[in-house]
Structure formats: structure tokens, C-alpha cells
Amino acid sequence: MKKEEVSIIPDEIISNKIYLIRNQKVMLDRDLADLYQVETKRLKEAVRRNINRFPDDFMFEMTKKELENWRTQIATSNSDKMGLRYAPMVFTEQGVAMLSSVLKSDRAITVNIKIIRIFTKMRNLLSDHLSLRLEIEDIKKKMNNHDKNIELVFSYLDELVDKKEDEKERTKIGFKKEDN
Image (tube, rainbow, N blue to C red; front, side, top):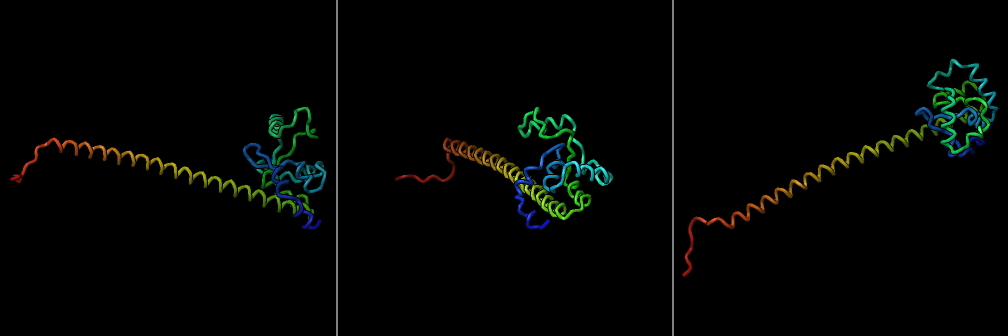
């Protein structure tokens, strides 16, 4: 498989196949099989033959409850099982990387490189988003402090105005010049 053919796959297609399950960004076996242009059955067989390469943080199978929840997240009716007879295997970023060593095809390697780059882009976007949130929180704290400081300045000004009014009522002492 030529690299040019894989580069034709738009990033959006791959990023739309990344889901959040168990608070992890993951891809489903059938989506990966589609991208690698192999049958899902063959992908699963390759994984099962090399199961020791896929610990739980690399790959897991969805529970029935997760599968139902996932279907509702993507707005698909529960009666339409989306061609899923069995709980799908779900691969984390590390699991996707491991797949290239299991499938051993040029296409799998090239597609994996593209997928890993998209995972990295997503992580960077989330990191940038987090740093923006932290900066906004910092600005809010500073604004809060500015509000308090401005209130303090106004209270001091009020005190000075009150003192000035008190000074008008006092009798002045010292040398007085007589008007002739």
C-alpha cells in the first residue's frame, strides 16, 4: 500500500472514530479494521493470538452497559446494533500503536502513524485548552484582587473626605491677620 493512498484519509475521518470510553480516548476494532482494510474478524484474531501484547490499558472489551451508553452517545437506536454481534474490542492510543506490530502490513504501519499523530494533536489541543483555562483563572483571581483594592482606595477616599469636612468646623489657631 502506498503512503499516498493513506494520506488521502482525512484527519477528520480518523478523529471522528475516536471515542471517550472509561475516560480514555479509544478506537473500536471495526473502525480500525476499516482503516487497515482488513476484516474485523481478522483483526480480532490477530489480537487474540498476541493477547499478551495488549494489557488492559492498551485494549479492553466493552461491557453491555458501555455498549448501550456508547450507542446513545452517537444517537443510534438500540435496536440497530450497528452490525455489532459481539462486544467490540476497544483500543487506547498505546493499543493502536501495538496493532502495527501484530498486523505487519505496510498499510497498518502507515495508518498507525497517521492515527498516532492525530492522538498527539488531540492531546496537544487539550493541553492548550487546559493552559488557557489556567490563565483565565489566574486573570480572574487578579481581577478579584483589583476589585478589592479599588474598594479599599474608595474607602480611604471616603475617610479623607470625612476628615476634610471635620476640619471646616474646627476653629483655626495661630496668627490671625486683622483686616483694616
